[in-house]
Amino acid sequence: MTRPDTARRALHRRTLGQWALLAVGGLFVVGGFATMVWITTRDVEPRKPTRSGSGGSVGAPSVAPDADGAPREEPHRATGAAPGELAEVRVERRLMGTIWVITVLSEDEPGAREAATAALDEVDRLERLLSEWRPTSEISEVNRQAGRAPVRVGPEMIACVRAALDVARWSEGAFDISWAALRDLWNFGPDGPRRPPTAEQVRARMPLWNWRRIRLDERASTIFLERAGMQIGLGGIAKGYAIDRAAEVLRARGFTRFLIFGGGQIYAGGARPDRPWRVGIQHPRANDYVAMLEATDASVATSGDYEHAFIYEGRRYHHIIDPATGFPSDRSASVTVVSPSALWADAVDTALFVMGPERGLSRLATAPGGPYDAVFIDPQMRVHLSPQVAPKLRWRWRLDTDGRLLEPLPGIPP
Image (cartoon, rainbow, N blue to C red; front, side, top):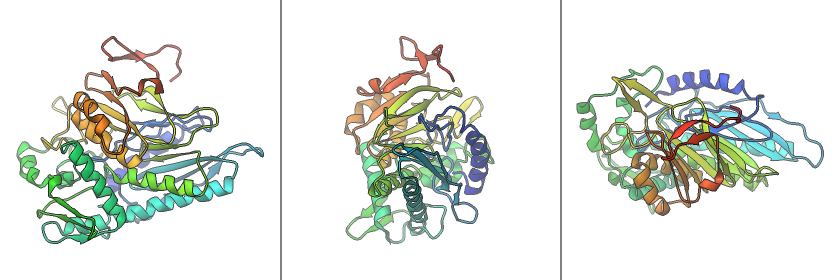
């Protein structure tokens, strides 16, 4: 897993250039770790993340502090609004190893700013509990006590681990937070070796990767990892949990039209005055987005094989590791899901990526935390859709008769 300092440098370089596009036309895209492309006051059409989580996802940490452990907050900006009109208030801060942005549409600019700041404060609080990069966090203590003793934890940790085990059970281990035992074998950061570990190295660690050996005792509020050397990492679910909590803070203060962007994953609260928010889906092999997806009171999350990846001896290696092999999963190029909950979307998109289109779509209706819409793009660039998602998509790329992405549609600006 990428260390916090290298991830921070790469993210800083990337986001400086991306935020320079703020004034140009407007689009958030979901599909890679903290890869914001544009945002506009009139529209939001996103792009994600890596889900940086794991079936095992070992990309840049989704829960990592700045060098001094403190968040960095950008200056507040607000568009002016005439009485009775909605203003846009946007608050930004670095949290969980990435840039978070909360945009609120409201007549009450000061109240919206205060609410957005409070929502990010809640994310900051959760990071201190759930980040494996913080030695004082609850998860770090759970990992230190692996094979030795159960650790008493708070309700936030219980909620994340409970949901993670539910998704592991449903997906038959395609999503598994005990991936972290392999963390140091895979490094997709800018300073990484750009080569995979050996099969022997991976094989030696695989006995430590087993969600069935995570013991959650909700009555005692404890978590115990049965084997010494086991580790858990919440990169594939903690960010989603934090997004849901941030949305609760905003709603509790009376704000219902908002967009939360956390490391690429998005939650769309309410809608614009004239229509739903729109989220763009990244093309896995092109610097473009293939479609826009409409979302209202829902989270949009994507797992993709392109954001943290390298090519070695002609093969693509990426951060979403298949628990069955210990090597990158090769059944999908990207999976985008829409769910009422960011927590569930954060984990389920990674599980679906590992499962692949055929198995994933056949099991989607029974996934915990649904209902879900899903868009798969397989390694051959064929698109696979869940039954109800088609009317919500506005395509920007042409598909052939087999559903393969061909080329951008003419007459649509980039």
